Every structure is written in C-alpha cells, then in structure tokens.
Length: 315
Ligand SMILES: NC(=O)C1=CN([C@@H]2O[C@H](COP(=O)(O)OP(=O)(O)OC[C@H]3O[C@@H](n4cnc5c(N)ncnc54)[C@H](O)[C@@H]3O)[C@@H](O)[C@H]2O)C=CC1
Ligand SMILES: O=C(O)C(=O)CO
Image (cartoon, rainbow, N blue to C red; front, side):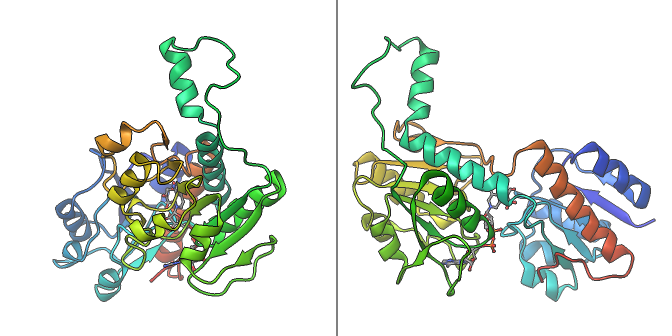
C-alpha cells in the first residue's frame, strides 16, 4: 500500500475512505515546519497537506520519495509549486467547492464592518449597552453602494453576485487579465481606479509572490475616507502596517479581515482597533465545505495513485 500522510484531522468519512486505499499516517501537532515538510517528502509516497504547512523550495531540496501533494484548500501559496515540479511532485488543489462559503464570509465581513457588528456584540457582552440609542453605533448603509472587487475569479464573482442581486450594489473590479462576467460588472482601468471608485473594496486574489503587498499604502490612500476594506484572500496581499495606519488615522472608515500576514499572529495594534472586524480565517469553515474539500483533495490523490492525471492539478 502507498504511504499517505494527512497533515490535519479531516472529516471522518474522508479519512475512513483514505484508510481503505492507503497506509495512512495522521500528522499531529498542527502546521508543519519546513523541516517537518522535508521529512514528510522523504518518507511518504503522497501527502494531503493544508495551509500553514511550509512546503518551501528548501523543503524540496533534499531526498524526495513523495510524488503527489493533494492540497486541502484552493490557495496553495504555502507550496512552492515550481520547486515541486522540479522535484517531480504533482500538486493539486480544491477549487469551486469552497467558493460559496468563502463568498458568504466576505459578505459577513462586509456587513459586519459596515454595521459595526463587532463593536455592538462587544458592547452587549460587556454589559455596556444602555438601550436603544438613536445616535449609537451608526454604520454605513450597504444597499445601492459600489463594491470594488480585486481579483474577479471564482470567489470574486460569487461575491459580485451576492452584492449585485442581494444588495442592489454597483460592481466594479480589477483583475490581472480582462474578464467577462455573468454578473453585471465593470472592469476599470487599474487597481487604483477601483480603490477610488468603491465604497467597499473586497480583495479576492490568490496569495504568492505576484500579489505580495499588492494593496500598499498608495492603494489604500486612493480609497474614499468613507471606504471600507475587506480581505478574504491572503494576508500577504496587503501591507498590514499600512492598513493599520490607515485605520488608526481614520484615513479609511473600517476593515473586515479573515486573513493576516503571519497567521495566527494578529498584531496588537490591529486587535486594538474598534474599526477592524476580525475573523480567524473562516472562509471555507462550514462542515459541508470542509468535507467536500477533503474529498476533492483525496480524489486527486486517488486519481494519481491509479495512474491518472489529478483533475485539479496545478503544476
Ligand atoms: N479566507 C479563506 O478562507 C479563503 C481564501 N481563499 C483565497 O482566495 C483566493 C482566490 O480563490 P479563487 O477565486 O477560487 O481563485 P481564482 O483563481 O478563481 O481567482 C483569482 C482571481 O484573481 C486574479 N488575479 C491574480 N493575480 C492578480 C493580480 N495581481 N491583480 C489582480 N487580479 C489578480 C486572477 O486573474 C483570478 O481572476 C485563493 O487563492 C485563496 O488565497 C480561498 C478560499 C478560502
Ligand atoms: O482554501 C483556501 O485557500 C483557504 O484559505 C481555506 O479554505
């Protein structure tokens, strides 16, 4: 039997199925360091890793037994796919099955930030709420406003649909390449044009070297002072310090974040801000979605083990 390492406790039915087909080891201890990953690559035939596991170029530099990484997650910026290819290791991911759940979290952040839900919840829990207040915690109206989406892929378009059909919003976007969308939306000329036009900016690009600090101080400075910034992509896409400064100085009105530059570390300065609505990387976190992601990751590994090409191969 081929030896498979699964780096997190995935849904039981998927784990059970994996055990019927592979000699499975379940990694314990959370995210794997570069040296854990190097050891895993030298020890197992195939691996089902996820976010946080550091499959860097260095991890692929030693002896490699593994031939297949079936990543649990659509984003694979934690895997150096070129180093993997050079080492003859196939990488696959889990697109589509998490698109709706992640778009829903983007809307949770958009609405939660606009309507100051975090502040309100903290007020109720602390006992500080003094009753209905005609001027208390006034937020930003959402219906009919303009949303600007950065990265109009699967998730970006699902967010656009929710904004347009659900909230009557006008949709503008910036994408690396020209894009025709089913949802009525206008592709503007450049990132800063979208930052400036939008009441709500939502970032939905992949992470990785091409998008690192795409949202820098200058991009944030292009936003309206009333603007609200949402990130569900990867923390590294945003200059976190520049964002904190924009929030501290009320250069923008608020930010809703699901992802951070150095997860799980969230800077104290960010946690201290009332105008930041912060979630712990919950984009795909529904039971149904996480099971579907596990199944897709495993199906790709099975396809490879049976001699086929994994359907969601990325390198
Ligand atoms: N918060 C969470 O839990 C989750 C986060 N994600 C993140 O969302 C990302 C997007 O996922 P999908 O929509 O499925 O991917 P996708 O590949 O369908 O969409 C990405 C879009 O970004 C565009 N893009 C890439 N580089 C760009 C750049 N420099 N400037 C502008 N546009 C650029 C691409 O052309 C594409 O249209 C994932 O790679 C992952 O990092 C995904 C799922 C859950
Ligand atoms: O799939 C991803 O890329 C995530 O961030 C978690 O689902």
